[in-house]
Length: 60
Image (cartoon, rainbow, N blue to C red; front, side, top):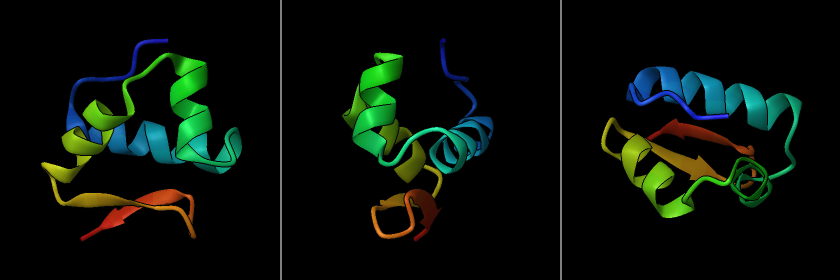
């Protein structure tokens, strides 16, 4: 599955998948064959960072 390119839709999709399907970001990226660095940078560009404790992207 290709993830959306719009960063805010991407944020919604990724956080939903992390909540419902994946125990951490590494598993999501591995399963979806996504580049973790690219994903983290795309969401950092709109003010979000990954929180392992919450297993979601949160506002900086």
